[in-house]
Amino acid sequence: MIRQCLLFFLLACPVFHLSAQISTSHVYLFQLKMEEDALRLTSPKMLTSFNPIGYNNQPYWVSNEELYLTVRSLRDTSQTDIYALHLTKGTKMRVTATKESEYSPMLTPNAYFFSAVRVESDADRTQRLWQFPIDRLEKGKPVFPTIRNIGYYHWINQRNVLLHVVGNPTLLIIANTSDGSYKKITSDVGRCFQRLKNGNVAFIKKESPTKWSLCELNLLDPNFGFKTITGVPDGSEDFVILDDGSFLMGNASRIFRFNPAKSDKGWVEIADLRSYNIKSITRMAVSGDGKLALVGQL
Image (cartoon, rainbow, N blue to C red; front, side, top):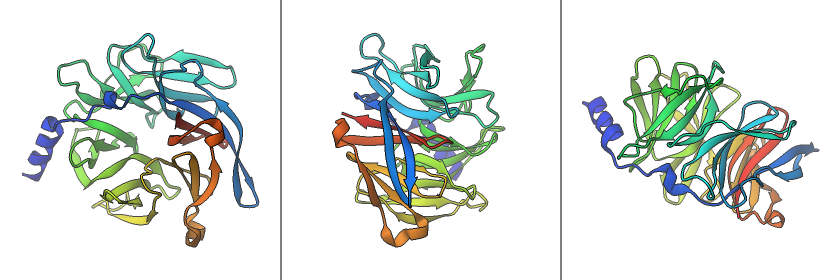
């Protein structure tokens, strides 16, 4: 009965479409530099000047030199597509060019495919998780044909995926790619998921409109229990995890760092990006060699 009720929610619940979130934004690149436990952002660069009045969001590092983005140009298209930027070569490539909209690009664990949330062109504007071959010789297919209203996701391994299901409330479920089965973990969660060094997953739990917490999901627990790591700055839900285990979050124009090894210090401000005319920092992604890509709304 519980699974039947959840299935009805996934298929029938009114969905908040990703396309409703479109706003002008840019992706910026910084180099992270550690100096005696003080973290600095250096070598700033705007990566999306090719789309100056459009939507540029959701950076994802494919490698230390290649970055996937979600892009919508207000000049020549009414949908979002995935672009690839090669930083060393200074090139960009439109990875998808479809009548649908694609969001949140990510490599699958076997690296033969990349995945994205697709807002489909049917009357219901169905949102499902799709996968596409890296060589783009095929058109791709849904990862979970029957699970809809997917807003965000995170690959655990080739068989299991965390899914953020849009609704009221939002749901966090874990789904199996082999048979399409799924299990509810919790509700009222944020859109960002990052892997911890111990293999668990960090995410935001929204206990109330004014109380949000950074939590650790135990993937080895059959019941997928989770615990609170710390509270977060008001209204912040996007974060990255650095090699030393510390967290970065944006709040308005400022970037904060939380080091669990020095939890008594709480969130420490490390940068204010107002001088770059960045008023709202949202998504972030960090590369293996210490480059930080972040989204700033002007």
